Image (cartoon, rainbow, N blue to C red; front, side, top):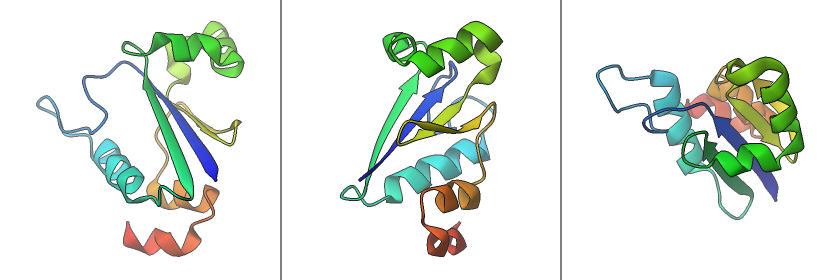
Length: 107
């Protein structure tokens, strides 16, 4: 089972549909994550203001925050390896990193 960990910056919601500006990248990410097979992928998603302990407990996340500040967020880890930072990846790129190249056509 692959483990995807996402460390989001402070935001009002992870879906991207709150407030007056809809963030299409966050909407696509939320849809993609909900479509993943739970028997093959575990998704752990953290938001800085609601789960700050997760940012302190992960040594790499803690180091990046100390070195670069919150501008390094969001951070994406697959099986404890940092694969994306500073912006949300396009779904086809994330899908490929997860080994789902055939899934790319759906987004």
